[in-house]
Length: 97
Image 1: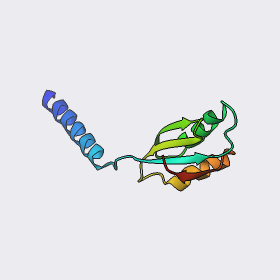
Image 2: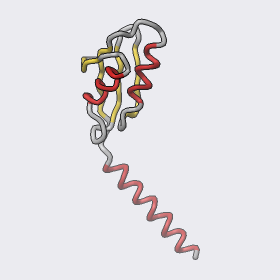
Image 3: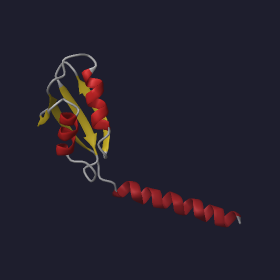
Protein backbone atom coordinates (compact mmCIF):
# COMPACT_ATOMS: atom_id res chain seq x y z
CA UNK A 1 0.00 0.00 0.00
CA UNK A 2 2.83 2.36 0.88
CA UNK A 3 4.51 1.69 -2.48
CA UNK A 4 1.30 2.47 -4.33
CA UNK A 5 0.94 5.82 -2.56
CA UNK A 6 4.58 6.66 -3.27
CA UNK A 7 4.21 5.78 -6.95
CA UNK A 8 1.03 7.84 -7.16
CA UNK A 9 2.75 10.86 -5.59
CA UNK A 10 5.74 10.54 -7.92
CA UNK A 11 3.44 10.22 -10.93
CA UNK A 12 1.46 13.33 -9.98
CA UNK A 13 4.67 15.27 -9.39
CA UNK A 14 6.15 14.28 -12.75
CA UNK A 15 2.94 15.10 -14.59
CA UNK A 16 2.80 18.55 -13.03
CA UNK A 17 6.44 19.18 -13.98
CA UNK A 18 5.66 18.32 -17.60
CA UNK A 19 2.65 20.66 -17.61
CA UNK A 20 4.76 23.52 -16.27
CA UNK A 21 7.47 22.90 -18.84
CA UNK A 22 4.93 23.00 -21.68
CA UNK A 23 3.27 26.27 -20.61
CA UNK A 24 4.26 29.24 -22.73
CA UNK A 25 6.37 31.90 -21.05
CA UNK A 26 4.44 35.07 -20.26
CA UNK A 27 4.54 37.97 -22.66
CA UNK A 28 4.29 41.65 -21.72
CA UNK A 29 2.36 44.44 -23.37
CA UNK A 30 2.01 48.08 -22.42
CA UNK A 31 -1.24 49.83 -23.20
CA UNK A 32 -1.69 53.59 -23.46
CA UNK A 33 -4.97 54.19 -21.63
CA UNK A 34 -7.24 57.18 -22.22
CA UNK A 35 -9.82 58.77 -19.90
CA UNK A 36 -7.99 58.06 -16.62
CA UNK A 37 -8.77 61.35 -14.90
CA UNK A 38 -8.94 60.48 -11.22
CA UNK A 39 -7.21 58.26 -8.68
CA UNK A 40 -9.98 55.63 -8.85
CA UNK A 41 -9.78 55.11 -12.63
CA UNK A 42 -6.75 52.78 -12.42
CA UNK A 43 -8.73 50.45 -10.15
CA UNK A 44 -11.43 50.06 -12.80
CA UNK A 45 -8.88 49.54 -15.58
CA UNK A 46 -7.00 46.94 -13.54
CA UNK A 47 -10.18 45.00 -12.71
CA UNK A 48 -11.23 45.01 -16.37
CA UNK A 49 -7.85 43.65 -17.46
CA UNK A 50 -7.73 41.01 -14.72
CA UNK A 51 -11.00 39.56 -16.06
CA UNK A 52 -9.37 38.72 -19.40
CA UNK A 53 -8.56 34.99 -19.44
CA UNK A 54 -4.80 34.45 -19.52
CA UNK A 55 -3.85 37.74 -17.87
CA UNK A 56 -1.34 37.06 -15.09
CA UNK A 57 -0.43 40.48 -13.69
CA UNK A 58 -1.47 44.08 -14.29
CA UNK A 59 0.51 47.18 -13.31
CA UNK A 60 -1.14 50.58 -13.79
CA UNK A 61 0.85 53.81 -13.97
CA UNK A 62 -1.62 56.63 -13.42
CA UNK A 63 0.92 59.38 -14.10
CA UNK A 64 1.97 57.89 -17.45
CA UNK A 65 -1.57 56.69 -18.24
CA UNK A 66 -0.35 53.18 -19.03
CA UNK A 67 -1.17 49.61 -18.12
CA UNK A 68 1.57 46.98 -18.31
CA UNK A 69 0.17 43.47 -18.56
CA UNK A 70 1.86 40.07 -18.30
CA UNK A 71 -0.20 37.41 -20.04
CA UNK A 72 -0.20 33.86 -21.36
CA UNK A 73 0.00 34.19 -25.17
CA UNK A 74 -1.80 30.86 -25.58
CA UNK A 75 -4.88 32.27 -23.82
CA UNK A 76 -4.86 36.04 -24.36
CA UNK A 77 -4.04 38.53 -27.08
CA UNK A 78 -3.38 42.26 -26.66
CA UNK A 79 -6.51 43.02 -28.68
CA UNK A 80 -8.57 41.30 -25.98
CA UNK A 81 -7.08 43.69 -23.43
CA UNK A 82 -7.76 46.83 -25.45
CA UNK A 83 -11.33 45.61 -25.90
CA UNK A 84 -11.70 45.06 -22.14
CA UNK A 85 -10.48 48.55 -21.22
CA UNK A 86 -12.60 50.16 -23.93
CA UNK A 87 -15.71 48.35 -22.71
CA UNK A 88 -14.92 49.62 -19.19
CA UNK A 89 -14.89 53.20 -20.53
CA UNK A 90 -11.13 53.58 -20.94
CA UNK A 91 -10.10 53.16 -24.58
CA UNK A 92 -6.53 51.92 -24.97
CA UNK A 93 -4.02 51.23 -27.68
CA UNK A 94 -0.96 49.03 -27.71
CA UNK A 95 2.00 51.26 -26.95
CA UNK A 96 5.61 51.18 -25.89
CA UNK A 97 6.79 50.92 -22.30
